[in-house]
Image (cartoon, rainbow, N blue to C red):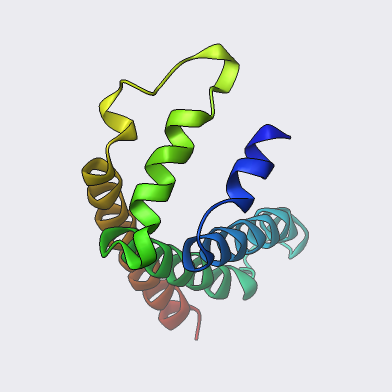
Length: 127
């Protein structure tokens, strides 16, 4: 519950992007078992769209963090300093550094681009 309160303190662009990413991830996570029910030899047409949606939200979230929109990287680093998962203190770790959060955002955007490329390739092979 403390994590949720800490996330609500984040500035709006990163908070909205995190909410959108978690919603899209949950929807795609629930649609993966649907491929088991589509029958042998048939692929689920929702999967390329889901991969593309995860990639798009990852790119947007990564760019917001990489470009430090409205001090979002600094706020995310302070979230890492304040929140102590399972009692582990990350306040002195390099993970709580805004520069690391910006690099992480850039890598997250790159992974999102790879998801979108993969969704495009899978979608073109399905047609």
